Length: 133
Image (cartoon, rainbow, N blue to C red; front, side):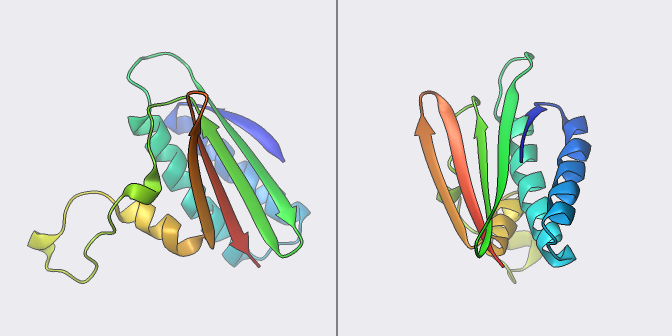
């Protein structure tokens, strides 16, 4: 399944709908839908919120594919370069005053997905995710 989102927060509803359709068509359990939705919602929200320094409309290309033992996802955008793998994990369990703002969503993505790869190619961020079944 391939689809394009625009860089607007309102597009997160379309993302959730498309993931629900994909999981239903491929007989994937609710826990997989939850993990995919949580991870993609976080990544797409970051792209929309921080990826663009203009007010123009941009495309976020997403492909989701069922493979033999899991699901592969590819996100591609033309926003500012950002590698989520370079982000430090938050101090889970630290006192509230010691915790830094941000980073928790990417931490969830790292923990919900089995593989995450990032590359910057031809002015685009490309994130590939894999979730094993």
